[in-house]
Amino acid sequence: MFYPAWKKITILLICVLATLAALPNLTKMPEWLPQDSINLGLDLRGGSHLLLEIDFDTYLKEQYAGLEDDMRTAMRTEKVGYRNLRAGVNMVSFELREQEDANRIQAIAESLDDDVQVDIREDTAHLMYGEAALTRKKQELLEQSIRIINRRVNETGTKEPLIQRQGDDRVLVQVPGLENPEQLKKILGKTAKMTFHLVNDSVSEGQLMQGRAPSGTQILYEIETNAKGEEMRVPVPVYSRVALSGDLLTNAQPTYSEGQPVVSFSFNTAGARKFADITSKHTGKRFAVVLDDVVITAPVMRVPIIDGKGQIEGNFTTQSAKELAVLLRAGALPAPLTIIEERSVGPSLGADSIQAGEVAVVIAFAAIMLFMILYYGIYGLFADIALLVNVVLILGILSYFQVTLTLPGIAGIVLTMGMAVDANTLIYERIREELRKGKKITSSIEQGFKTAFDTIMDANITTLIAAFILFYFGSGSVKGFAVTLSIGILASMFSAIMLTRLMVVSYVNWKRPTKLVI
Image 1 (cartoon, rainbow, N blue to C red):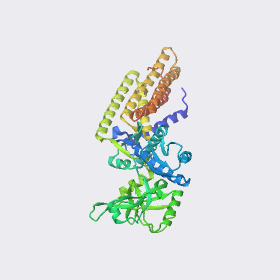
Image 2: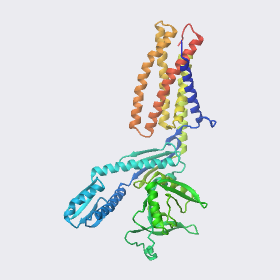
Image 3: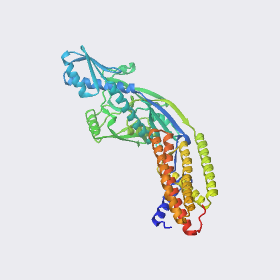
Image 4: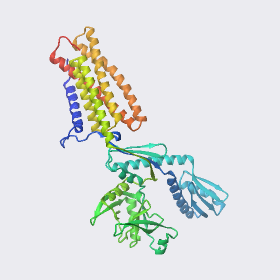
């Protein structure tokens, strides 16, 4: 029987590459060979499980506060008279001085935000978001939070975190192998909303001690450490108006200045222009860097900064400077997050699960190999070799693409081992049927593989469709099962159809038996 050389080379090359990709799971490889091993999921490796809830009410309150400021500016520009402008929890309200300005208010509000609905009764105007707008904002808030959480978690160097929505206002975060869950909680618990404010140095010491601030000024606090190592809250009066937003930052990196950890940052073009303008006009005054309503530092601007770059100095450690840089690079969370559920999976549970999975695979593998040899003889051995290669292929693919392996994933591997042998059984039974019809050996082998191929394809395609459905609609470990099942099916088709055929054809061409016993 003729078997093209290019097919032989392709099959052997795939087997060699899969073996090289799978070997890092068993031993340390030279630097010039693949180094990646399989990522173990939370149930196998242990790690941290957090369920976070998004504070939509706080987000909405900030939206209405922003709308209040925008309306104040717009009405002053348009010379619309008003009084008692205030933002509440679910609306912005004010009184009109002139009833004929009602139509102008509608136009002003729509120019600021298309989603704002205006309700004017007598001389009082109410601005609020409708139900459809609130639903869309909640959806956008959840999606934005997930993106930022994902960036923050991935910045910590962890592999394959699971981050997904739970309901309308919750996010599930699972990070396998995280040795310090407190670090993750610290990173996720911060809104990381950074703003820059000018300091109002006209506020007297007495006002600061009493916690009183003039209109347009708020008193925030800077954490300092005294000579005894005790933390002190130092009041800093800053103008309420944001001089520069942290949204304009393009990069932040931990570094050192005069031997002390600092965070270096840089603005985009618009931010650099504003930063240069502020530092030029207010040279000699203090400029506060505020993160989540806490003053990180409030240095004096001694010279104009025109290149859009600066440093945040404070009582940083190397770790805290690194964490702050991560937060600033990932971006600010649009709303606070509350940890409502926390669970840790210890490595001992993972080790037990791995051991149980290994035992299951070994037992299944040994039982299948023994059965195939007893039932099909030398051809059963070929099927066993194909099965071994099938497992190597699965491990190699999982390692190369850094797929996370969970306990259900191990179940998927064991399942595909049975499916791989099933394909070989179908092929051998078809060959037996052809031999019973009195056909020649070569013709029986060719026809056996050909007729079995359609059946194998139909069975595997239907299983792949089921796996894709599980992956699309499932989550977490269900997706892990679907992924390993799909990889196992593809690997089994290669090993059963192509590799087994190569071994059978090569053996028959070498031995040239007068009778095929299978």
